[in-house]
Image 1: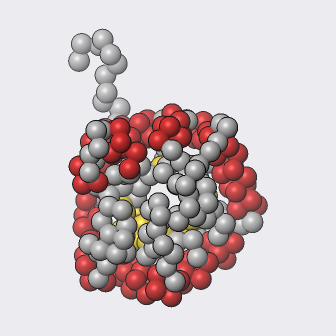
Image 2: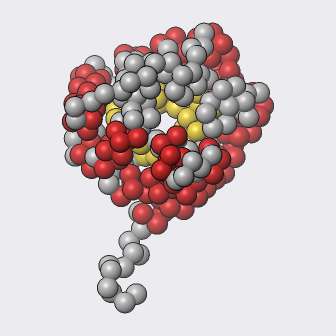
Length: 257
C-alpha cells in the first residue's frame, strides 16, 4: 500500500502533493514502483494534527481518486462518513478507517474496510497513552470491530494495530512483536510503520527523510510475522524486500549456500 498524502501538514510529505495534478502524478509513480494499492488521504492524522472540514478533505482527494481508480486499486484514508461515501462512489474500493467505525459505509458500497486502532483523536492521542497489556487490548478491540463488520455484510476486513496512534515507543515495539498474535486471529493484518517518529527515536534521532532503513526493517519484520500488507512511503525498496520475504530461495542457516 503506497501512501499518497494530499495534505499540507502530514508528518512526512505534507504539502508536497497538495496540488491535484502533482498528487495524480505521484500516484502514477507509486504504481510504477510496484504499489498494489494507493492509499489517498486528505486529512493528516499525525499526532497533534488539527481536524479538516469534510468538504475540504473531499475536494482534495476526489479528483485524485477518480484519476487513479482506472489503473490501480485505491483506498481512501478517512475518518469521516461523508468523505468515505463520496470517495467510494468516486472509485475507491477500500476504506482505511482510523476511527474503526465506518464499516456500514463500506458495507453499503460493497467495499473492503480496514479497522485501525487509535486511542483518542489525532489531536489528543499522544497526550498520555496507557495500556495494561497493549497487545491483548488492541487485539481484542480489533477482533470485535472486525466481527461486527463481517456480520454487517463487509466481505473484506483488515485489522491494523495503529502503530503510532496513541502509543508510546514501547507500545509500538510490543505491537510489532505481537504481529503474529494479530495474524493468528484469522483476520488479514495491515501494518504501517513507514518513517514514523518512534523509528527516529530508535535510530539516534534520524529525521523523517532518513528513516528508510528502519522503515524497511520494520516492514520486513511485520511481513515475516504474518502481515498481509504494509503501508509505506517508499514503495520500490519495500517491493524488493517483500519479494525476498515471499520467495522460496532463502537457504537455511548453515546450509553452506
